[in-house]
Length: 181
Image (cartoon, rainbow, N blue to C red):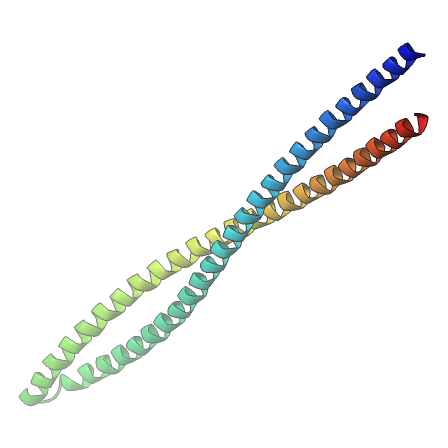
């Protein structure tokens, strides 16, 4: 009888040891999954912030582009007006020739401004395309991180359920063992 009791005690200790090891392993996996989830959530928050910054810059550049377009049209309109004035000034006297030289200077300045604005517009167009590409990339990174966070949350739930099941089994085993004695 004593031998049977010792064997049962050994079996109980063995079962409890295995249950504790299994529980420890599940707890470690749960902690690892929680750390991965936290890391993924931080990455997602950073990606969302970066995405919003790019979107804001994109909108600001779009507004600048509209302003430059309006300035360009205004300068072209002024250039046409000056060209008309130049044509009429050819037939006037020396006072008009002096006025003509002034208008030519203005014309050159406006032409330089137009060229400068066209260069700015081309640069803004390139920057706008870069920002659109970066915005798309940031949004794809965000979708990837959201998917990863969902996967980790699912894994965490599964591990929590497994942990609860093992705790129930351990309690049930302890109750069964205590009822036998």
